[in-house]
Length: 259
Image 1 (cartoon, one colour):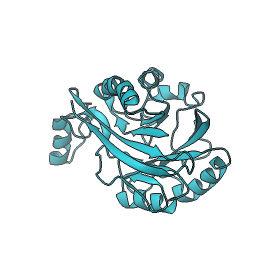
Image 2 (cartoon, helix red, strand yellow; image 1 turned 60 degrees about the vertical axis):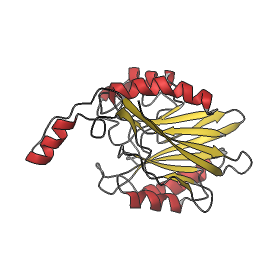
Image 3 (cartoon, helix red, strand yellow; image 1 turned 30 degrees about the horizontal axis):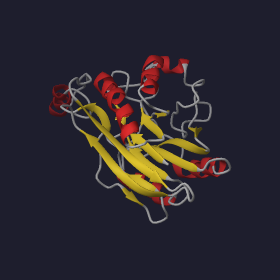
Image 4 (cartoon, helix red, strand yellow; image 1 turned 45 degrees about the vertical axis):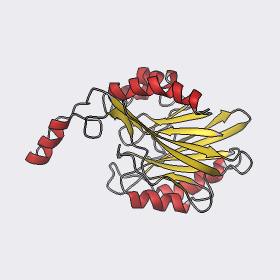
């Protein structure tokens, strides 16, 4: 099985580049399933029903999110009804939506978990380690493969989470920072890992945002309205190849496509 996990899609340029390149990648790389983080797809913050549909039409099978999932309130129209739209599982129990799903791939079943970190993150979340234990135990009853999008800031927390679940899940990939890291690897017990997938968004930007307002905030120490950058985008993802018999990852390849 070949799975493509794609970094945070940022704004219009990111969406269009995702929709343009994903079908090509699926065909060229013989991809069986695509998981993409869409929490920044609606003008940099949040997700709308229409934009969710765009991502699905562009090739997404499961859409994960993160701490910006509630920034556009229209997502509430679909968060409880779309089976393959996730929000971090460690929000409080009465939060709308769900934190994991099961997706069929041929004769196999793939569990996808969306989890958020706690270090340097807002709002405060429940413990992802202990909750992860419970969810993974539940998914193992029916899933051949389990993937985790760990939406977090600190690389130490991401690595600790991945090593804690090494051998129990097929992959742990980091999202949130929008900067692709070069530490893709297979952990000792067979779990694929990368600290951050990166983003699909404007190359000439700061994390997908226009440059000047970000610099102005650093210089002044005062609030500055951020706007999503336009222009040619980059496409960041991780290709994970999985042994169908063991459900372990045996190969990972970092994807970085420039315009």
